[in-house]
Amino acid sequence: MSAERGEGGTALNRLRALHLFVSLPVGGAENLLLSNLKLLDPARYESLVCTLGEKGELAAQVEALGVPLVELGLMRRGGGKGEVVRVLVELLRRERIDLVHAHLYHANHLGRLAARRAGIPCVISIHNTYTNPKWHRRLLNWWLARRHTGAIIAGSEEIRRDILRYDRVPAGLVEVIPNSVDLSRSESGLSREEARARLGLAASNYVLGSIGRLEEQKGHRFLLDAMHKIRADGLDVVLLLVGSGREEAALKDQAARLGLGENVRFLGTRGDLGDLFRAMDLFVMPSLWEGLSLAMLSAMAAGLTVVATDVGGVPQVLGRDERGFVLAPGDADRLAERIAWCHEHTEDTARAGAAGAAHVRTHYSDTAMVKRLEAVYERVLQARD
Image 1: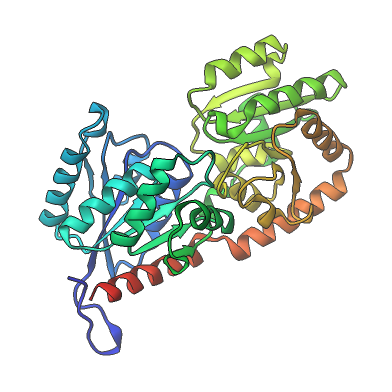
Image 2: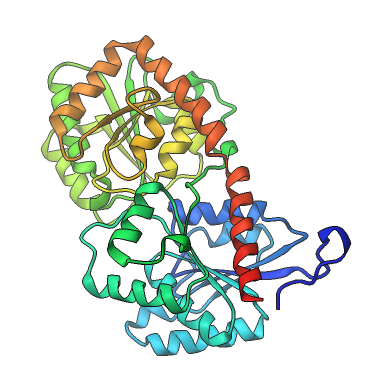
């Protein structure tokens, strides 16, 4: 049951919302969860987090917020979706959950089935544009949207277009709430010199940064090829690659083969993004497909100029080279040319960075987006009542 309300709309009972993921590695959707947990109105919402598989790296941050986290540990076995749904239904009933908010494909699928069986509404979030969408997923999304979905939250207009095009769901079901960032994560108490000294960087280095999972989607191999071309032209450039993933070994082999040596630093997963941003001159995002990158938004909030590929919500944020620079994905030559141009045209580059910072701080702060999320929750709950 949703909370009863007294005079003036005061909540007499808090709503219990369960946030559902398969796991909680370091990633954009998972960082959005942290913002939601911090900012959802505590007088109205009480949160519980559940992972269908293992907890993951960000679980400790969830628990540090005082939010209960339940690890079901069921996904590692492979198959057994009926068992996952059964156990999840038991959890929803035992914890007296009012609303499920699921994220990413498998949690979106299983969460809707369990919520329907438990008799409560489910909201799902889709964080990426569709790349080679599989027919059976499209069919399943179409069916679940009509029977088991209170609302679908798309992280960008481009994601919304893909949902409508491929899944054929009712347009009124899809709400665009752009990915947003915790602005405090972009801040640093270090000077540029101090931040560089911690990383062993020289003042003369032109420092590029790229943050994201080391996966095919992120297009890092094209950035390494661009680094090789830039180095061959004599530019003293260093690349900081932040993140981990299945492509890490292949990317390290590529960097060694190209003779990049210490000019590419693999930093792994890091929590000190503000300090890393302070050490950088330029943020580069060479993704092959994307929704709306939180790493990019965070870099912009820190005042860094961004060079990114024309995917997902990137052009909507950067404009026509007004607040950063956009180029086609998978083109190492053009990427190298644009990075070299930014190095040579410092005033134009800095102007774009300042415009980008102002734009993100005005339009993509997590506080404003969580208010919109609460409105979706309330609409879905009222429709259920």
